[in-house]
Image 1: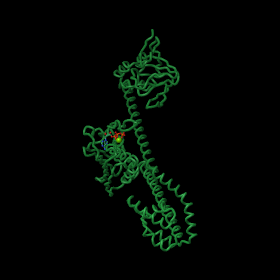
Image 2: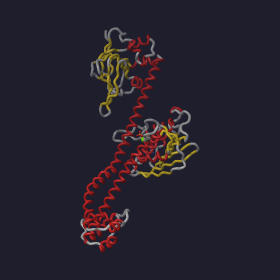
Image 3: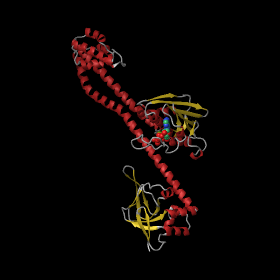
Length: 492
Ligand SMILES: Nc1ncnc2c1ncn2[C@@H]1O[C@H](COP(=O)(O)OP(=O)(O)OP(=O)(O)O)[C@@H](O)[C@H]1O
Ligand SMILES: [Mg+2]
């Protein structure tokens, strides 16, 4: 006689002899490792064995697992579909699949496909539960599997969240670097072309014997500084007319350069009186070119400086080249964080810093703390939809450094306030194109402040805005604080 069990779409057949599955093989599985031989025999009698060929799928992501599935021989591959199929892991026999799914009645998280011919066994849920309630060592083993599974889930989510944050940061920085880099490149390109023209202007100076005093006099004219575009174009038009009337070549090119330095026809008149028309043309042509090139070099230098500043801020933000824990200046760290986040703040966020400059340096994990500022500021920006005010205050309170980050966004609803530091708590289900937020930003911040630094983090909020308050011991972490021993973030 053959028994048949319908489990996950498989018609499984057990041979006549009930105890066919090798007990030593079952005992090698973690959840059965502590079972006495009679229990193993009992188990084996309730299992149904079957074989599948390479390439067969025997558990599908999203299906409910009504049995515990045991791989007795062979290899299987687990894949997950997150918009595309991803290999998760490869398993070699012996292995048990579905403990958390059977325990919690949740769908299977991956699809399992045989990589070779596989021998499998199914343990029906009823037998699994019977063993769970009647056998202490089995329920302990199951609890251990569940706890490892939760830890793996959380670690994967944390890694995903870190990767997403890094990707976002990198994209923002790339964007920020793009403008100064292209200003630098186009400035250098322009310089290359203009250097040839400058040679022609220099020869003209010699040809018409323009004196050094004349060039020095022209060079000393005007001053740099901004002016309204209306005023600028008015000055340009008057200068171009004046230059054209004195037969200076290309007045339309020279006038904007001179006007940008606030040089007027009145400034140039004495030169026109003292020089021949050819000398005036050569002298003004040369001076305008030099002024123009200087302005281009200044722009390029500003671009290079900006690139340097961004890279320096990025290096400090990540505390590259430094050990994990060091003495840090909180204000520098927050400024670097803000600099790295410029791409997100510059559209409509006004950041006010109210720093207590007397605050001493403190022992901390610098790059981790920067993740705290990043998460809090990011939430504020998202809450305010990119438009609003953020105030960052620092002060000393006894032997603690206090950082408060306030925004004037819509605030957090009272019933949500107690949950914001919990893992996976989020209200942003449709914010990002790539799916909902993970709700880990503040949980990670909490762990960094409380567990890593022995500090505290809290929040107060009403309709006029939200304030996060972080307190860090100046002397670094004291005592041992574990996540489980404290509430997940306090509501101030
Ligand atoms: N400044 C704030 N103003 C209003 N609501 C906030 C603010 N900061 C946090 N919250 C609320 O707290 C929730 C949890 O924040 P948390 O940073 O932990 O997760 P998230 O921002 O939703 O997702 P993630 O940070 O993982 O992308 C947010 O979804 C939001 O509802
Ligand atoms: Mg967040």
